[in-house]
Amino acid sequence: MQQTTIDGVTTFWEQGPDPLTAALVFRVGARHESFRTVQVSHLVEHLVMGTLPKSHLDCNAQVDVDTTTFVATGKPHEVSDFLRRVCDALGDLPLGRLEREQGVLAAEDATSAHPALCWAAGIRFGLTGVGLLNASGAGVKRVTSEQVRSFAAEHFVRENAVLVLTGPPPGGLTLPLSSGPRPKEVAPRLTGIPTPGVMRVAPHPVLSAVLPRTQWASTVVRVLVDRLTDDVRHDRGLAYDINFDALRVDRDRTLFAVFTDGQEEHADAIVETLWGTLASLAVDGPTQAELDHHLAGFVAYAEDPRASVDWMQGVAHGHLHDEPHQDRAEAIASLSAVTVEDVRAWASWARDSAILGCLPAGRAGDRPLAGLPDLTEWVPHAPSPVREVERFGRKVVSLAPRDLSVSVGSDGVGLTVQGTTLAGRWEDVVAVARTEDVQLLHLANGTSLLLSARHHRNGGSLIQLVDHKVGHLAFDSTEEEMFADD
Image (tube, rainbow, N blue to C red; front, side, top):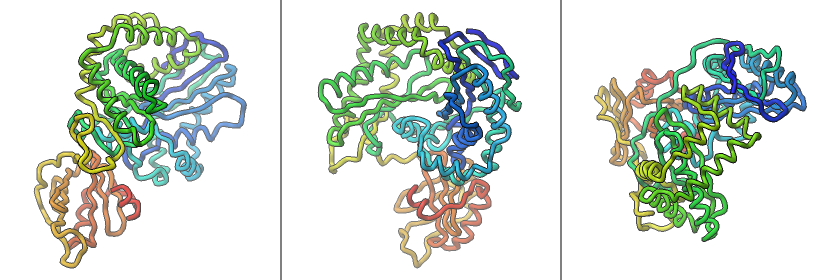
């Protein structure tokens, strides 16, 4: 593999099958957004691709958790023209098309990862970083032109990009990107949910867990999926599709989710099988035959010329995250050295961090699913009590619960209703949806506080106090949307 620099952009290339393919990869994706700008990366990508003229060039773009990628395959001069046009558009976005592209994205309703993985990320990481995968945010139609412009200017810079090619760079290739520091990553913030456990709120059977970000720890997931396919699909016919998705949490951790389809009446049986299979791996590890099968599959992938683009995009991802990359021979050798004990230890890590998701229970009093604690009603631990400056009790004439009250202090805000208190520090508020007299404060841990001037004594003063603290995070909403999200 060759390395060079083009207009300040780190570039890797190796000779692959014709025609030439190029992928311009930026380290910016869903995790770099905020609650108020969910899908802004996708908006930038749509705006850029919308500037390209009609042609028969095979080109596309995609946004995932960590990256935004523009890719094209064709004649070298056509690929070169595509890359230049993409860079030009990133520097001068056609924001006059913003409303139309917002409508397209609303219709597309796409996610940056599989919904099961999005759910798992939200449960563990709330409304920051990778947790945003499970958030609809303020809504793509509320992302403003200025938010799009500033986001693109910060993230789509040459220092935050890598170009990979399946052949030598075409003569005259230019990448006219602006310059700027590589943005810092948003550190994930755990919600504190205890593990292992079960939540009966998932869209379908899913097992999510954390693995150390150690090379080949993913062997656990590969073996797990193979065993589940043999059992759940081939032996018992409970599901058709058994698959997985994974994301990089940070330098030390990877989050994965294994998920299946299947009829509702089989959901509990599938979840118990997911848990039992992982628990077995954590005790006994895989067989040597399973490791050999996994190695053979990787060797076939690494030696397939058609995998060149995918492999090189992996190199780009590693470079953008300052992670070392190996050539194919080195990778095969390191996977060959993985032992049964290695995988057993990684599976033990995954078992202890597992959260299983299932459909809601159909009958009360069910035994604990898979013998694990039911976390369905779990709520993140509230911070220390708010140092109260002012308390707003319930109006005498109100249909709200009698114990309704809000405490507002210099450090945060707390809401008590029906014997439960939820609270957050001001710095934990990530967004505020508001109407004239209602505010919904979204907290980093995924909880929310609904404040209504109609139900509190001196309710107008309550709204003003909150506005003074976090009004800069507010966006206009409707009560229908608020209560749908609450």
